[in-house]
Image 1 (spheres, rainbow, N blue to C red):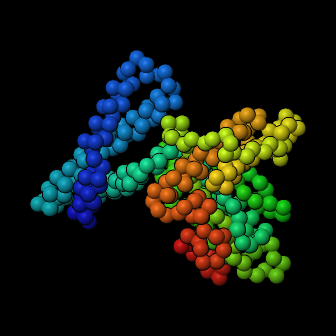
Image 2: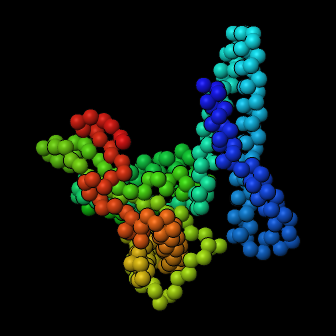
Image 3: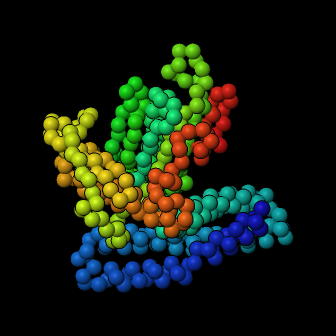
Amino acid sequence: MFLSAKQNWSRLATLFDLEGKEKRLAENNALMAEADFWNDQKKAQKIIRESNQLKVLIETHHSLTDAFSELSEGISELSSSFDEDMNELISEEYTETMKKFEEFEIQVLLSSPYDDHNAILEIHPGAGGTEAMDWASMLYRMYMRWAERKGFKIELMDYQEGEEAGMKSCSVLIQGPMAYGYLKAESGVHRLVRISPFDSNARRHTSFASVEIMPEFEDDLEIEIDDKDLEVITMRASGAGGQHINKTDSAVRMTHIPSGITVFCQSQRSQIQNREACLNMLKSKLLQLKIRENEERAAAVRGEVKANEWGSQIRSYVFAPYTMVK
């Protein structure tokens, strides 16, 4: 068991590229020492954030290297002269080391471009009517609880409630280390099978909801949008928010005409703030479009998202006639 774990560690250590990480950290430290470092605060904050992440990774790498070395020595001594107390101690150290290794492995594997960005989460109900809207709201609560447990910051950009229950759509900004990296695999259609509480005959229903994950756009990325390519509509915000929000045209719907992508925001108090939020969301969608085009997986963001119907789901949550998630 330990031999297999040590082999996995050697493989991951090679993939990690310690020398490259230390070189990058040294470059960032040199930039931070320059007199004009804070002239561009957003760029400075990004460099500091990257440096902090690199420090944690490098320190964890050194810690695990020492831990595997100590375990190897301990197991070697134990094989030549068995001692019950020492065996128990090594078992505890092995369990703790493997826990740290698994966490480190996730961090190393989340090394694709944009994995370290914040994430924008969008959920839309599909086939299934009220049941699908309720399912969409269940997914929303699930992701919010997950983000809270990770200690991530949550900013609700838009939430449209359903007529009877659930919701019509939502857009949420999730801010935290590797937020996009953790969430990107959730993009797709999610299927629910259960006895519907909205059916008086207690029949089994199947419903669908689509989840879309995008990296938050950052100013240093090159995404240019011409004003003439935008269609902007303002309207009064709905729901709670105070007299100012509900009595002025503060909500903004923005459409990028060439791609057909539409975004909506009503979470901010002013139209200017909502317009800026919409523009950032639109740039995030265009960035996601660029990512997927580079991967040759789709020609457009909407084209990649599968239809919200039978046979297109990436995950099924079955609660009747048995319980299973796959």
